[in-house]
Image (cartoon, rainbow, N blue to C red; front, top):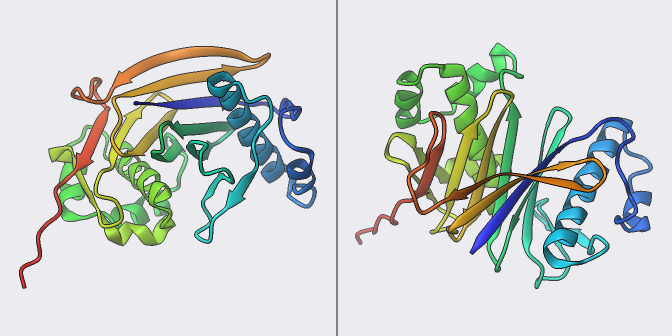
Amino acid sequence: MASHFVRWTFIHNSTNIQRIPEKLVENTKNFSERRRERYLAARMLLAELMLRLYGIPQLPAVITTSSGRSCFADPELPDFSIAYAGNMVGVLLAEENGRAGLGMEIVRAHSRQTIEHHLQHLSSAEKAWVNAQHDPIEAITQLWVIRQSVTKLTGEAESGNELLQLHPAAGRLRSQMYRDIEAFSDVEPLMVWSCALSPAVEKLHLWEYQQHEEWRQLREIQLKTPARGPFAIRLTSLPYEKKHS
């Protein structure tokens, strides 16, 4: 079982909407220019990924759940998650009936006040891990991005943070929503990203989409082996604690 994470750095007016249904494009007419551009870029990227993997020439119908989570209307189609970071858009797609959650942030894009806010919401285990890292600000951002990816997978958004425990030093996490979640995160020179998947998968394929329908494979991550790289983190689910009556 494999999943795919593709990102695209788009430029103004570079989105090709030929694979996006006309009705979906029409629904964006009242969006701000920035929101419309990012929204359509993400749907274009998702459409291109569906074409590449499944041969589907146009983006299938997408609906929004009561929790605000986007998914395909056809339950037989794979789950996906969308994230933005600056002028970069990313799509994570989980194959074979899995669920996906994607988080992305530009390195050092947030104010000191935002970083301090994130720090206040970290657990004691997370703060201890942050203090042991070479770059605490980068470490705080990475943990927050991991949280984003997991809560987007569960559909609980920010409220899901109270239902999620991270133990980065031990490479573990516990979600009260899903018993089998795996999160893989890495820090690159410009971006921090995290892919959350349930159930755990064997491979994660990383792609970069370029103009003119060009694809470049960045790497293939074997998720059953220890994370490689100085900033790579792999978190797997802790067993549920049994409650004694």
